[in-house]
Length: 79
Image (cartoon, rainbow, N blue to C red; front, side, top):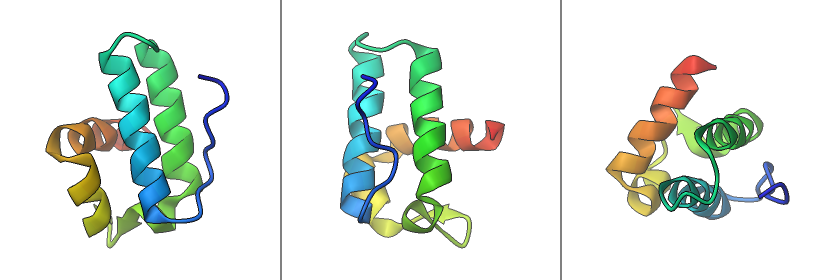
C-alpha cells in the first residue's frame, strides 16, 4: 500500500484513490492508522480538487458515496 500516489491530476483520480483506500480498510488490507494517514495526505495535497467552499465537490459526492465521504470528513476534522 506504500505505492499509493497522494497528488492527482483531476477529481476522478482523487475519488478513485479515496474509494480504493477506504475499501482496502473495509476489506482488512490496511489498518486504520494507515488509512487515516493516506487520506490526510490526499486531502492535504489535493485540497482544490476535493473541496469547494469547504464542501466536497459534486464529482466526489457522486463517485465516493455518502459513507466514504463521512469517513473522509471525520478524518479532515482531525487535521
